[in-house]
Length: 363
Image 1 (cartoon, rainbow, N blue to C red):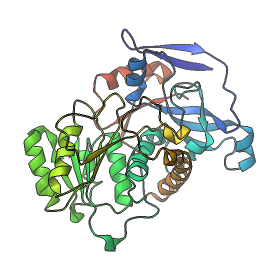
Image 2 (cartoon, rainbow, N blue to C red; image 1 turned 60 degrees about the vertical axis):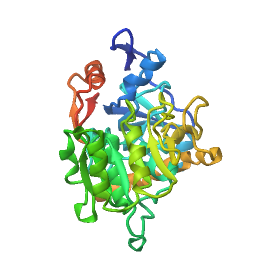
Image 3 (spheres, rainbow, N blue to C red; image 1 turned 45 degrees about the vertical axis):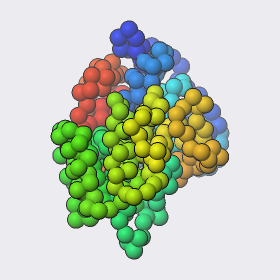
Image 4 (tube, one colour; image 1 turned 90 degrees about the vertical axis):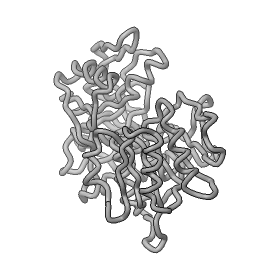
């Protein structure tokens, strides 16, 4: 079979090579890839580490073979349409004709969802879910906030990104409102996602930091916001976000989820009442953080259950997709199949993906 190796330095390029079809471990599934999806981490992580690998992790395709334990469960069969989250930086990535994923981060694609749409979902949606429901302890969609509980504000910075929009979709299913969505030129993708009758609002960050803070305070209309997600986590975006939460209430604690492990989140301008929580989506595979990662949860033992959470979450997600209560992200197909991965990752690196995820038709 053919797979793509991504070489990040000195400039990003790809190499297509012939390798054997993977053999699944007991808890794994080999998938014949129909569409692979890409994420910013597919170039940024390997650039930081200066390693060349098949860095794709979002898979949509057809079950080719099953590991021994997966066969016993009877949950999947050869020929099933599935989407999956591959273990990051391990062999068998998505940029190939055949890829490998653990069964617990694989889910059935309902007939009403295309392979292209499905390929936009696995990694980023789990990142949003772990951020909101595991790290911050907000109510999950299968046990939503009761109507009698009153408002529960959530501020999302980078709201029109894939991570931001998936977080908003999940928050709405959990009856979390008002959602204060901070974004820029791609704000149009949020018009159908927010419930403006419940106080949800769109704030444009391009008006400047101080004007943005004022607009958020006005949008909250006196409510105290204690939860936020920084879907960008770059160039200090978390600092004004933390300050917004601090100024919305007389006392903490406040929680901000961040998603870039290269930052320390210890800037002098951060109020002491704000707790930062780094989301490492790999805990959905391994149940642990890497020792060097920032802002890990104080309760390390609870993290191991992220594996069980991922199993439950993906199966519930398949149910939501089948019912039409959830959807993927807008996508753009990059021409050329595996040969197009180089172009797509360079477009991602150059910041050209505005309101879309890049996907590649492999077969």
